[in-house]
Image (cartoon, rainbow, N blue to C red; front, side, top):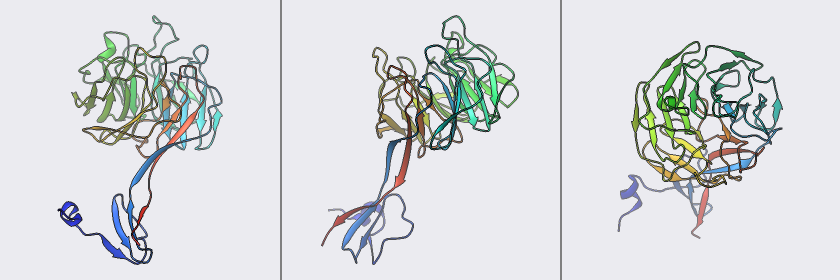
Amino acid sequence: MSTYRALKGYSVKSITSDPANTKEGQVWYNSSARQIKIAPKIGAWASGGNLNTARAYMAGFGTQTAAVSSGGNITAVSALSEEYNGTSWTEGNDLGTARRGLKAAGTLTAGVVFGGSDGSVPTQYALVEEYDGTSYSEVNNLPSNKNNHSGCGTLTAGLSFGGSPDPTSVKTFEYDGTSWTAGGDLNAAGSQQSATGTQTAALGSGGYNVATNEEYDGSSWSEVNNLPASRDGAGTSGPQTAALIFGGHNPGTAAGLALSLNYDGTNFSNGSNLGTARYALGLTSGTAATNTSAIAFGGGTPSNSNATEEFTNAATTRTVDVS
């Protein structure tokens, strides 16, 4: 029989009190309490403050405690913008142009939103607006119209890829805070992919009726291990090598998904479920977002939702009584 030391390379220490700063996976024996203890990280979604207006297909950027929800669809396309402070949403200044299916990058005080449509197939936009924490201002357009595409990164190093219409569905565009330039094409065309990461280390997962998963290195895309099943309109948070993918939609069904997936840069594993299954939800992605403090808001259930959920992945302590 193998021992813990042989498996892990160290012994379980016997100490009289719990350590002050535990590490994930740490195991010890508390001789005073006569208990074996372990410190795993446990991820869970919890309810946050609701959006003031339920909507789907919006852009989101920022962090869990400083987020922006921009545009989207109510009964028609909207220019509405709201800010989240970690507790509640407050309505701010509207977008210059109402639209849905737009995407974003950046933080609450330095954000950019791009593309989208007025809800009809022929009318899709190349419009780009920057947000300074108070108001939106129109800047240089995308090189072509984009709708239901993907976005991540920052205001000065943003990324737009995939979406519709053809033939731009494989195109990648990079933003430097002033202008857009062409990047490497996706290997597989995709609409409503989930995206996270940076301009030089991005992740694009799923899309309409596909389970494709691709990584971007700043110049080209590489196909890596697929999602366990196809999903579109999912949320994503965290870096390329430690991402959290949540919600979304299976083509052919009206309802959203609650399942979250963890991605470690190679493989996927099941995570904690959302409290409200949905797709086309708002999220924050890019350098400011993490896989330990994500946020999901709005989306379709299929009816529009105003629910906000916050994800935390924190160390806890579990005990085994051996007395």
